[in-house]
Structure formats: C-alpha cells, structure tokens
Image 1 (cartoon, helix red, strand yellow):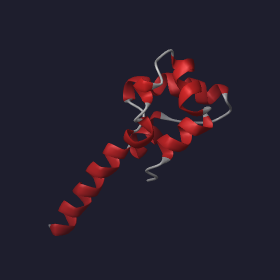
Image 2: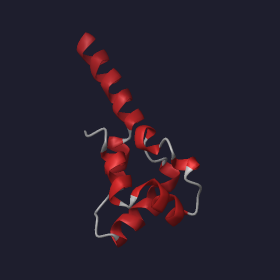
Image 3: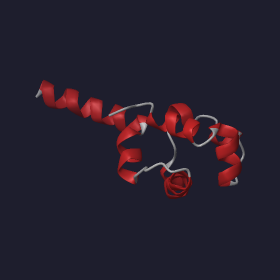
Length: 83
C-alpha cells in the first residue's frame, strides 16, 4: 500500500486550490488531506474528477491507501505477528 497515494492524487487533480474549487469547498477545509487522506464523503466526487482528467481511481484504492487505514493495518499486522 502506498501511503502518499492521496497526496499524489490531489497534486494530479491540480493541487489543493483547484481541487477545493472543483469540489466547492474552501482550501482550508482540505488543507490536511495531503497527510490525513481524502475523507470518504468526497471519494465519489474525487473519482468523478479523476475520471474527467483521464485517471482511473477506485474507492478500493482510496480505502486501502488512506493513511489512517494503513496505520490500522500495520497495527493489526504487528498483533498477528505477536500472536
């Protein structure tokens, strides 16, 4: 899993300012998305914008690469190894 997928997607969609404008929200609202990931409530709209830009992005990709999901998976992996 690639933890900077959300960051790279934001950049590919034109950056924070353009994405905020395209989503109809303030730039401040999505300021932390580079590090926290794109909230699930926006995934469908972001996937539509990505498709319009010629990018193929799925909800599964977004879910698997959301930084909080990666952290939870890493903790679970450690628990499994600790047995």
